[in-house]
Length: 153
Image (cartoon, rainbow, N blue to C red; front, side, top):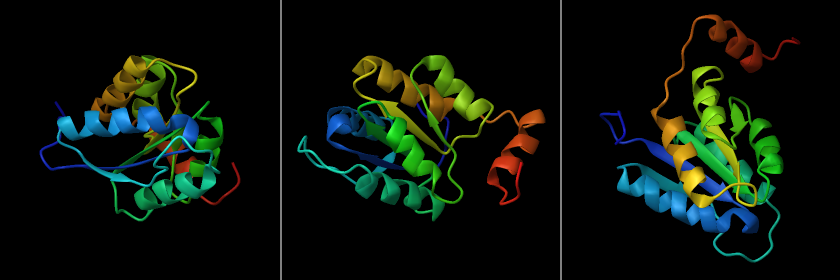
């Protein structure tokens, strides 16, 4: 039930500890009419998460995808990697409120979820809320510009 009239593209990537939720989220997005680009990993075999998270975030930065979702055991390392990519504002989300505020206040274009921290049902709710929320602008715009600038804050 996306409010978008055009098909939106979502990049998705995980390490081995986020693989199961990645697959569930991918299916969920496809049923909602989103196009997904899966950057792996493609099993629960142990991997180094930067190899999969950086290309996911880069696809959003380059405009190949509109949004990105990264997953791992806690989501922390994945958020750190994503935020190193120019133009990415990745928010670690663990509740419905953090998902909503990630978009409304921070205009997050990528979210990170920890599979070992929350239920699959909550992870799907987080994705749905984040994608259906809208950046509020206003006082938040100045802050977003500060985040996106190369200048010292």
